[in-house]
Image (cartoon, rainbow, N blue to C red; front, side):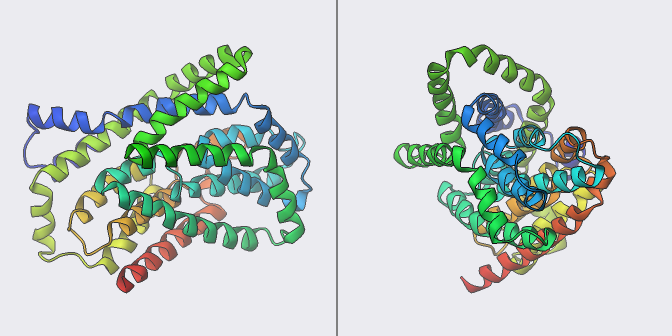
Length: 379
């Protein structure tokens, strides 16, 4: 698929010099997934994480799904899809088919939407290459708002029995890990500001050091952490290749005049923001339903709309991409989140793809895109 995209948007085969420059620019992306595999393996051994897992397992049924969505959002912001394995173990083993499906859908919603604000996602790594670092951080700030609104609307709307008492019970489950998660995010932010690094560079720099500290504190866990990291790396090798290839295609598209010429043949003026910003998440969501992963759609759209191709604020464009990533991975047959939860929660994939989350995903994409377009018109 990426090869088809490259043939479509490029006039010529990239030169050796272009390939070298592109390789240097996207090399750090190949370091992100191994780093996150290491972080995930380490988190799975932490007593505070297990304490949260046990508390979630004791939640009453009326608070369970909402609590899982909240927990998936918090854990997903740091360990991404690793949150699913952690939270599926908190579901009572005698749960019926309906409860397992509701729990799986809630976990997916919570986890994927954390991509709107988390610098630990591949989505952010892709988006930040198209804008200056300051705009990438602004996009994260916007993401905290969009993710918060989505969480409130879906938890209240989809879990009718979830009220103040259930919210307090769910938040109490996160108590053991709250300070550690805050410390991780603060460390990444401080290093990025002090050393003037991009968010991605800060993540790749800070997280291995934090893991090393954890290993020194719990040396008996080192063997398990290394083994789980190696196992995860074997499973994600294809993802590294696909993501790196997608970023190379994006780099070549930006460097080449062919993409600009192609767009100019359709629309010769600067594309209005009210078209570009809704188009990014809606197209990412729509194409993901038929199996085209957001990494392919987003790299193409960001290459078209960034750098003056559209009349949009760069931070809003990145946030539109992050909203589209969350929406697109919420109910797609190509989504690792959906496939993982189908296995862990023992729910057919088709039920997760065509269930409540497809409505939530399209709603998130449409409302998020239109909202960002309105903000763009006001600034």
